[in-house]
Length: 368
Image (cartoon, rainbow, N blue to C red):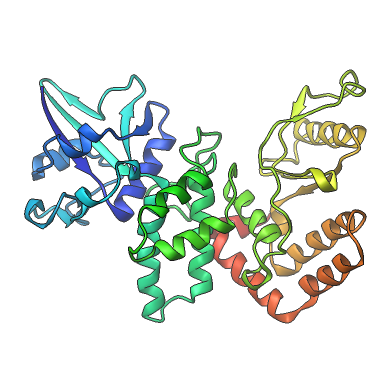
């Protein structure tokens, strides 16, 4: 069988990564050294147009970014924007897009094409490289670039994927398999030291968390855990979407065998959940009530979150005030002083407005 390789780079790699995560007939697996180093990497227009999904890529209007071993192997095809250095990047930096059966992405007759994308750590470095360019040209504040990267890291190390073509406003895929963790992505960046954007990507990963389940969860994590200069509250990292087992003394009275709160701080016995669906219907309201009762039965403070709570900085501030009141029961007097500064300091409030603008898509700010 004749085998070829299409190794996507930068923004186009991220597109394909998101597409593959959202498609139930596809999966992502570590790219093998054989595929990256031995399979034929030359491409032509016919291959590009046949292999890449046309609902995601339109090479006639946007040349596709592909990575090749070195400058001498770069494609001269008019539909391709070539990048080099594949031979100098670690194998762990790439994932292969496979069918759910484990076959190459494209198989027709006696030909197969292996489609390779950047793994989350390398994808973050690529995104950071582009953002560094905007920062250096004075088109984006460095803090905003960092917040954007934290949001991307939370998606890539979480269980959701934004739309590949319209990430800000398009549909989001939920309840996906994880493809990396913060720790794994940081290990990969350790191998990429010296490349532009890696330092900024590392800073973003230091602030990120595993397990985020939606764009709104990533936003609220930022509000809770980023440092105040980035609009956050510098709270300890919560568990996100981790199963919460009930104690035996309440197991026979709770409505759910187990819960998986969006955020859970064991040291504060507090859970938060974002109610993203239609909670005006009777069935949804009943389910919300059952969940609230279960948390109460187990002695867990429960704070539900809605879109209206993220409508503007004032609404976010109200939620933080409620959460801080709960946390103050477990912390000393110093926490109350810290909470007052986070709620009232004009610089922190301004940073929180920047956070709103960077992590929330426009539609998420619309409320009925």
